[in-house]
Amino acid sequence: MRSELWRILYSSVKKKTNTTIVCFDPSKKALSELKKNIKLNNSKNIKYYNCGVSDTVSKSFFSDDISNFKNSGEYSFIRLKSSYRVATTTLDFFFKNFNLKTFKTIIIKLDIEGYEFNALIGMQKILFNYNVIVFLELSRMLLNKKNFNFKKFKIFLDINNLRILDLNLNIINIKDILNKFSMLEKNKNTIGDYILVKKSFNNIKNFNK
Image: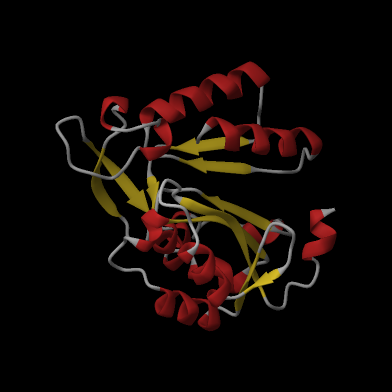
């Protein structure tokens, strides 16, 4: 859990006492900071787990040694001298015994350094069964993953009856995204955050308010 996301989530928790937040982060360092914030703010409805979110339940090498990266946002599943093994899970597997029906809306924020598509593949049951709003970052790191291309992404969206929105809730298509990537400056890595929702989810604008 990175500090910017923490501030956003904590702000929502303060306003809605019936909100439950579940955080996943493979970085022990990041979770240590999160624990400090939880204690500082006396938060009671935040749970956290030291694991990565992916399309498989397994273990992988992970490094959060800042000397190997430009900043903490680049911590990665990579095998280096500083790496240690971390569990990965799918959200479908993790939440299979949770009673998610008690929540009107489930919000999922993905900022996982190019592994967003893996995480989406691992949550298809949740996407199918519940009202879900997914915030995700689209970056060059995502484009560089072997299991990702926009043809697969479009098929995934169609199968799961999803549409893409920008943060102003305008409908975006794959061509729009491809065009933004084609115009992205070489020194920049991301085209920004987007939203995935079911096509049948008509209350997104009311939720935004």
